Length: 288
Image 1 (cartoon, rainbow, N blue to C red):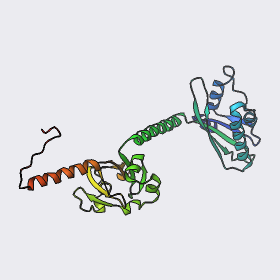
Image 2: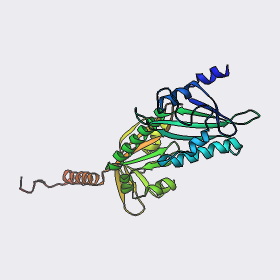
Image 3: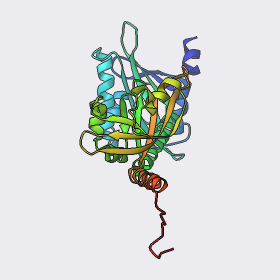
């Protein structure tokens, strides 16, 4: 029964005695070591029953020497009882390409002592993690290149991350936005008509409260020193598919201060023209 259980494991398993010598292996271990031996159907050196697994680790050379010594030390500490277990991950070079394995060493629970060594193929997991990291790096590069400000808020409204454009537009560093949650308390938000905007009307607060996207909201940010900066704001809730709650909000905004001020000037000019008792003619620079 125990043999059948061991042979049913997908990972390569070896049982070591208290001195680190291999006393049993499963079918996956035999298959793997024979596939990587120096001759067909011959196990790789130091991996067969009776061989010292510790010696094989100690004999590692070149670039593999530091890893071999670390593994040998980890196994020895498990055998001596100094460690309850030892886990490490490592690449394995093969003709079909690089593969990754996780090695787990646990004590053999018998009076004579020993350890069980299990190697599990984690290549797919490592490749998936690399793909995610590459995707995240690509995403961060794109976000950093945007002229629009991007700020990520968590479910409580605290700032998690922002891009350089957000720092430039708001005049606050990313560290200040993240570490000093009330950094914007000294600012006043106003609607497009200049009237005060209540906190619960702020697009981020609306997106968190309703779970609905807020798009094309024009608001003014009245800073403590530099007057009013006018922004065109979008806020998109981040949904958590696991529990249908909203885990935060991504806010994007563009500085439209120049455009807003020009539009206000045109509106004022239009009102002056409409209210003037005299005839007014508007021409371009060529007199047309």
